[in-house]
Image (cartoon, rainbow, N blue to C red; front, side, top):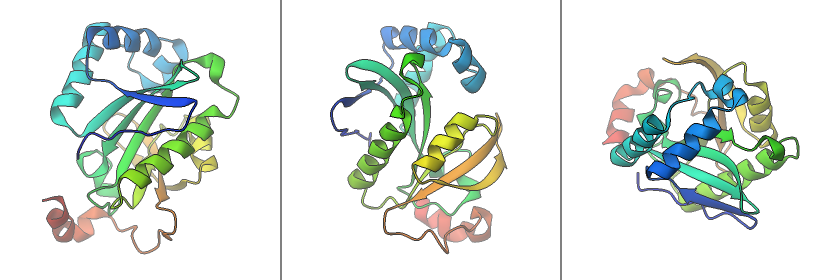
Length: 200
């Protein structure tokens, strides 16, 4: 997967994070806010965040971005390739299908519908930039009801509850506009040969 870019309409912007010490320090500060420690459980020190961002850059499966709204820090997101993720076994993904994580960094910007607006723009950008992409997925913790409600409002549907190594998650899936999403919800282990060929 080549590093994605997010071409967002103004007043939104996306800056790809690569692992500078300043980026690690900023993420450590944001992720240690009480509500993000509870939902993300990644209140790590700056050094660990710096190492995490550099690991993502080296492996090339997950791409972190800082999202700004009107030049104010709004969210940290991770865009990742679904076939290289822990939720790979739960759906018949295509090689270009993507998932995402989102953490709203500024509590002063919540409650205004900005999360829904951003995810709509992000979804449109990713489908536009990846013609082979058929699905976009999110997998919030089952207890993260605000995030689940946001995904539903942008048109993602809950597929199933899944047990992941680090959490119990609600798997949400959105289809490319114009796709019905029918006939593709096949567990990966039932068609392992076809999917193995797709990953090569």
